[in-house]
Length: 400
Ligand code: SR1
Ligand code: MG
Image (spheres, rainbow, N blue to C red):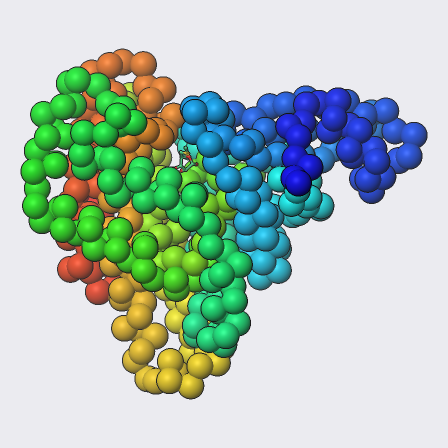
């Protein structure tokens, strides 16, 4: 029988005290819950000497909806294991797991409270010089070392099984690829956007491209993805970039994480039209976002290609020109998933504060129109891209 019980602050303190690993034996501990995400409880435990840790516990349902949406506790095991595997490859950019209890769906993590969540920072027009280099390095290395270029077929098959994550994948399958394109109850957009949404849903070319992207998501276990690389899953300061929250991790298409990240930078780009009135300041921020997209693409590509040339262990995949062929498809997928992220965050269930927190209704609506149009154009033109520069040119031809 499962020994799962939902924790509160007192139970967390008792548990951590019993573990006896993180604080002095006689430390006086305090604890509070501060999770504001869609799914989990998140506690901070601290002593009086400024030592602290994070305790994250999965609930058996989606927190943002309630008990009517049951959700597997296994996501906590997946999250801790992805963090550990990605952390072995990129320790500087992955939140550190200090302890995990699968039965309790509970993970103790390093406290990153001295850093800031990237989404909030971008919304304040704060910029970070390391961001795109760090994220590109993380995405390239974690995806290469979990791909068939590097793992043996039997190693990879065992990992695909270990990281099978059907319930969380089902959320993405529904929210990313299905709901926005039909009249689904969970969708969330203002009446004033209805006619734009209807036009989008009648675009047959778009629907076929979305179908291809969903099929790729369902059928291409290319690497161990983070699975939810949005700007709320990244802690930053001037010297650090740390990825958190890979509970949606599974073996999927490499372009998915890359596209999700770029999609979130573009959501912020669209939102800045309403967030910053002064034109020079707005343009500076938007240029920063575009520069970060360009750097993410070029660094991701260069790092991946270099790894493929020097570290590929599969004999057939070493064939001259195969890595370039493979990466072209990764880029096209990334552009498509980026477009899907723009659309689903605008009209689907899970929105972004970048747009939703814009107070002026008309300004917010104009931003939503931009995001929808950009998303649509990226999806239908993704297959024209051959190089990272093609991707960049495509993006700048549809942002304005
Ligand atoms: C019910 S979960 C909604 C969204 O939040 C997560 O962070 C994922 O992006 C998911 O799609
Ligand atoms: Mg999350």
